[in-house]
Amino acid sequence: MKPKKVKTKSRGKIQRRSAPKNLEQRIPYQKPALRSDAFARALTNSKSCADNPESLHALFNEAARKAAAIPREPFEDNWSYLQTMLRLIRAYHRGEYDQVSKDALMWIIAALNYLVDPFDLIPDKTPFLGFVDDAAVVEFVAERTRQTLDDFMTWETTTR
Image (cartoon, rainbow, N blue to C red; front, side, top):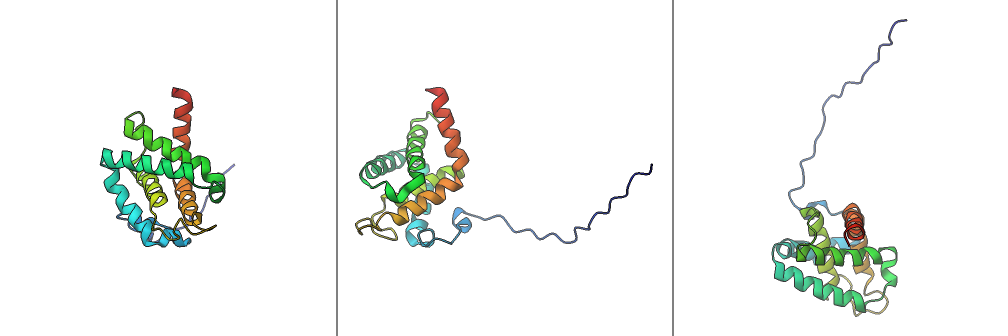
């Protein structure tokens, strides 16, 4: 029995996109909150916050206070991930947990920066809608960093 000859397609030219130079270039623009100046500001601030322990601690405290005071309804299925982001930042700041990539850390810090920003896309004082944009950002970041957040939750349950 003769082995079959397998035809292969010629690859021809392969177009490659250059890698994004920074986080802002990778934002999918389908949701207005992610296209806002407030989110761009939150991303920019996340870089300096990650490198400054005092700023990171202050952000954690402010975000934890805000999360304790806001309604859960706009966050739906992502409320537990918001809480996980807070715990991860606290553990990272304390030096208890360092198994987070710089990229994931930036996204999580950006989500918390956006959460505490009173001048985001929809001001938080706006009845009924004030936290919809915050929830959209938390959802986006939770999806983007889900494996990191899940790994952190696993670490929490196995080390405590």
